[in-house]
Length: 388
Image (tube, rainbow, N blue to C red):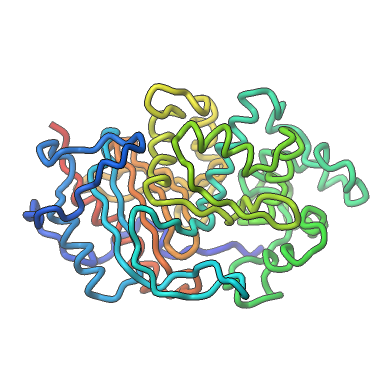
């Protein structure tokens, strides 16, 4: 069985630091200081001493000078936004005649960014809200119970596939996605999007392992999840998420594309980095944002608890990655929403920390590209000051 590989982007093996950050470097005046945009974020003061801002300024300066295609780095700690830096680089932007075109972009706090598979983790939150409200009875519902129109695809083996298996990437269906999307028809995700009925395409794949037994990364699972939310709530997933997740978080500008009438839950979401950080803070706070419980703590804990061994020494929950990294002399665990090209929200509960990175390495699968992306997170950990 082929599994999608993410190499060192998801690995926690020690990598050489990109910037060779010194301890407690002085920050140029104004560098990385978040602006107060009246968007619900508390803003840290320099006196809070939560992060070594000077070290992060040096790191992002070197990123800008090296030609690395990192677009933004944001850090929140103890519920406050403590560092915010936007860079420039090549990005895939919506085109008029073509779906995507490459363009040089100067990023700022107002720029929407493709988050790719970070969309999956956001979809997990929407599923949790639907379960909290009794609109989805249980993640132990058989997947075909939501798709009676596809009953001709049922087999004894496929009847064992439950909603939880779609959320945990353990459906056991044949799926090839470990190739750049430019490879066209060698990629099941591309073939699914070309199919008249994407859910039929996904559920028509051959069984390669019993449901629930092994991790097998499958963006097709999100076509099923998106349709399940639509069927259960009466709203497309993007509309349900906007009303019940984005609006309570004060996220007003998110853009979530659809194909074949359903929300592209596998990778179609565009958010601003500050909005991505809100998603991370929501998870860190157990489903709360400021004084409002948006998603139940029970679903946050359930969805971010390890369910299966995944790739590169990582584990997987329900559409959330789980990993470990070094922070000084200790090893810390993180929860991650990770998207192709270097998009990431990483939550480090032990440090009360949320780290957001956006980048433009969409078709670059080289070890160097993965190393640059992961080193940003690693350098943030190094710049996180001890409490007290």
